[in-house]
Length: 247
Image (cartoon, rainbow, N blue to C red; front, top):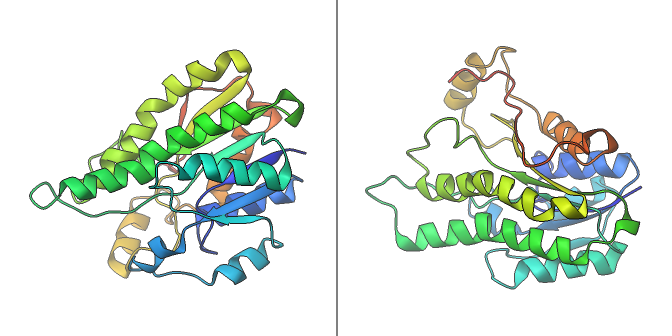
């Protein structure tokens, strides 16, 4: 049984909730993080956070805006206080942001980079600092969104920040390898979390060999493997779990 912090657990249809469910079901003590104001500002809107937590069995929860420079360390400290030394960190949260080249602003770029890329590194830093081998085999899982496989011209702030996470994974893995901490990155491919409209839903499904989007549970299965005993030799990798998505 391990101890885990999972960020971005705010919607029942989201990948974060599926990850938390999977880790809880295998016996981990899990702390979940959310920042509902982000969801509230998106087209899909915010979920009922109390219902989200209730469906997970009411695990310890911390709300935090990870765009703040001190927020990642404070979140890790709060999670450790709740369940003891952490053995697993899953950085699932993301700030979504549209913006083509002719409309993107410095503020857009800075905020997305802070919430996504900078927070991922600072969370990993704080996690590594508190890690104790007695907590069990240590693992960090980061998330990207396929920017290394195809352009995202409509979402430059998001693409920049999530692409940076994928690029830093190997470096973070090397930095922590001597402590037997693994660091990997997951690209879950098109995942049905309820954000896409009818046209996009149909178009992407047609480009998937199975004729459907990937599910949050499938992404959670990859995370469970990377944070479990069978993946200890895997570090510094980007796992493209796209289900054969044909762009």
